[in-house]
Length: 218
Image 1 (tube, one colour):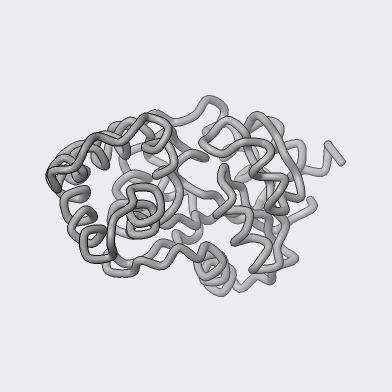
Image 2 (cartoon, rainbow, N blue to C red; image 1 turned 60 degrees about the vertical axis):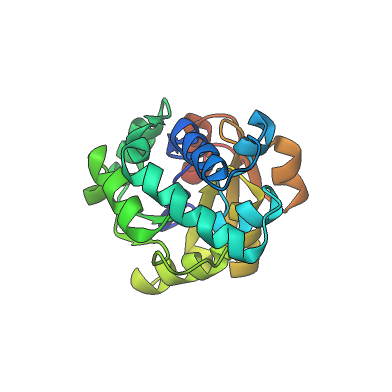
């Protein structure tokens, strides 16, 4: 095996959480009395931290972004948290990784208590050796911090792991942490975005990710 462990982003990589996230963002924007965001803008909220997204994509001040986060979580926690579908092939990818004796972890900017709920809801939580996610009051958008946290928890080095993600935030985090990365194109980032930010590998499917992990595809 090429690696000892595989790290996964959550939203846009394991599951398509777009509907729940976008509905909650729109709810927050409306609660602030602002015009609805376009579907294209809403899609950009999937992946980064909420504070970053509301400020950079919603055009809000830091103060209003903090209010928007509160409104977002009000809606998301009320039911939109589970408004997602698991991508085809993900469960099979998990099974192959576990059968090969590799460790698995999640590195997500989704707050820890929500990440645990989502993984538990789908019956995936027990498959992972570690879940690296920020506390609700941590607005950091640095995925490398989470990657390093997972490495420490599993007693591994950067050379032992590969990070799988769908946006530049996942890839940039892997580059900063010094580990390999697989950019997947079925999520919310483009092939160009993934390549421009340093993805070591690119694939269109979970099965393609397995071929890379196992060394079947060089």
